Length: 249
Length: 249
Image (cartoon, rainbow over all chains, first blue to last red):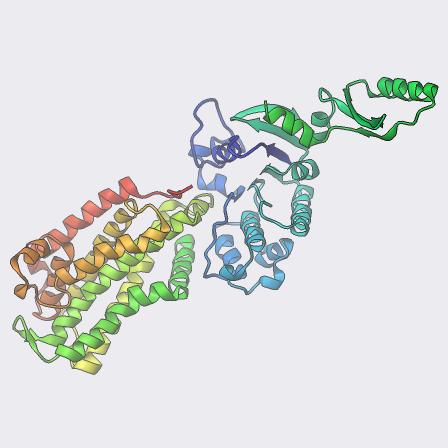
């Protein structure tokens, strides 16, 4: 699973739409499953699943009918009822799409992306607008897909989502990848670890790449003076710090 | 063929599920037939009885409402809601999709024409068409030409909200000026001048010549030519202006 992370307007959707075949690339070469997506055949479309950034559904159909309509476009679809269960819409099976909440519509979009049993799945901001509980549920669904051996490209501006789901993450800014790696690689390395404590009633914040040595120095000095380092805190950078640092430059 | 039938079934289900659209495009001509038929069904218009004159006129109004207005509004809404874009990412070939949509539109229009003819027979003692094959040929020509114009018009409409306003602005005056309700012979000359270039004038003339005056369709080459010419203009506009992706985004 690959995560594309970046602020609004960074080019996430543009990138995904090039990979989905909606628009031609301005330059360079693009291949998905060995084919240039912009000139891809219907056979290629059998092998991809797409969840667009905004919901794209027929309001008058029920959940079950919607999934069956899309299942009919593929030669080897998955069982529609199984897919509805997978996105946890079984209780809404016979509800009209127009009566669904925003989060439920997104889950139906996800079901439509999965029903063709694709090898490569594009998810463009799949959980935007979800409440925290629904987001956890959606994450579980996506993790299950990964367990099935699917390749997934996820775009998001939620850092925790990328951190939770993606094996590799690329940070995008103004159309360029400014950093790429596993979430651990991105948060390790260059960015400094923060050490905070209180001294003489004032907050002290230090940043260092040599945490062990600096911490040893600080605590040794404090002990020698017989002082306490109040509220001592050592914080590894999160993806959010990396993100803010790289995208605000 | 499997995909075509699958999509045709879907289109028919979507049409009848959407009550507002079904009312305006399908039932309104039927209601007008009943209302105006009761008012002047037994008067003499252009040398024929009012009821058969109106019945043929309402088939003209029906082609404008189902194949032109209804199709244009539906396709703009689907384009702006992202449904068309989403369908492009499935293995359903675009040509199969468009053909299914057109076939579904024709079926709806055909059902409407049959309903008008049956009601005319039962309520207003209008004889059944004496030249059924000529009538069928006229209906196919009209549906194709007006559907092409409907698809051509979608390029001129920017938003889903504006679609019914723009489409109604075009088709309601056209339906009245073209003489689907009344005889254009009594119109002031400037209205007749407009009527003389409108495609619906010639389609309605064609249905009246075939249904009321029992002409063979091939003796009406002038009307056929104008309707077909407008169809070609619509086709060119459709090829140039039809979009799969939302205009507003």
